[in-house]
Image (cartoon, rainbow, N blue to C red; front, side):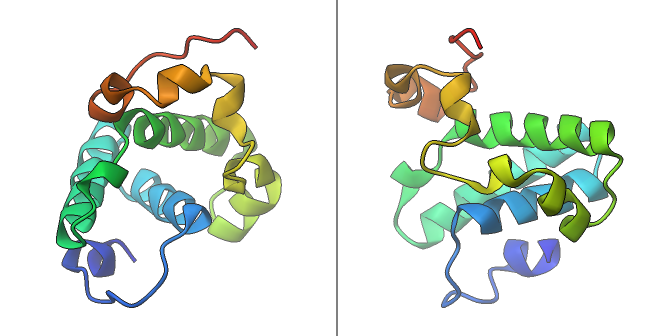
Length: 124
């Protein structure tokens, strides 16, 4: 999965939010946390560039999901995607998703949050 994404072998396949989460899960399973963040972020940027949609990459969203996935994997001891997805359906929901509880809308909509990881600014 990671190799195919990094090689960008299937340009016709849709790549929705749940697909992003599944791929992020694969990176977190394969690499230590900081390496997973670096590799996944770089791969997503290349993916966006290849499609002429660089504005779609969002560093805060990307990193926040990787951190949440890593934490949830440890808490649930999930080792397979199916098990993880079953225990964490909230991570698979995009609209009205989990980040709404951590970030103000204006923060996630900001150019700063797109460019660099911004810490959560909303109390739960």
